[in-house]
Length: 225
Image (cartoon, rainbow, N blue to C red; front, side, top):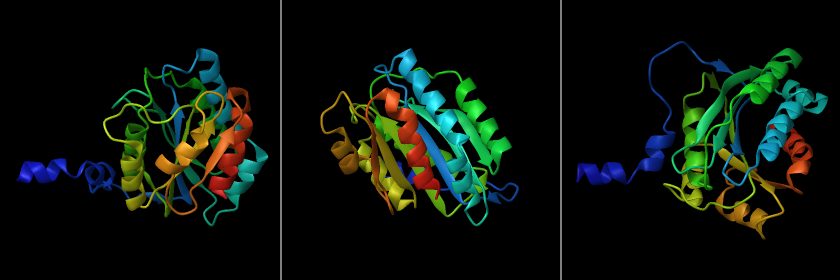
């Protein structure tokens, strides 16, 4: 019976905040995980467009102004790549961004991190991984957001996207999505139904990979502000 009850609570165990003793965590206005599609359908050129788009967005005046407008004037940001079932990987760990210098450091980390090995489209596993990353962050924030981008819906994972999304929302995390259009019909609607959730959650679209930089910049401004 005990084993059965433990197996019934994967989402709760995945998103519960860590209780280990340690130094006090500094507060920020927002904890934000960029969960980027690195599945097998993403070519090297498309992958580089995504990485460069995230890096460029971080240093834009509009993003810096949005960060500075918060009560604490700082956010925590990390990057996850996803694709393979159970294979989502943290490629850039937490950075505290509060000014142009720290934004530039985060941008450089986005560009420099090696690409992880991924396949398929296990979005539920990506959400679970990002939620655990937030639970163990070295900063504290009342606003916590997973920003997931991809060009296809959930296909194969340990847990369905909607189940992982519901657990993340129950843990106080908002999940937003960026649908990269051009392949799967109705992708934005699928993301709205299966991926996004929490207060103020939304789906934004990019008209293909070349539009990613514009879309992620607009999305980050909305999430941070």
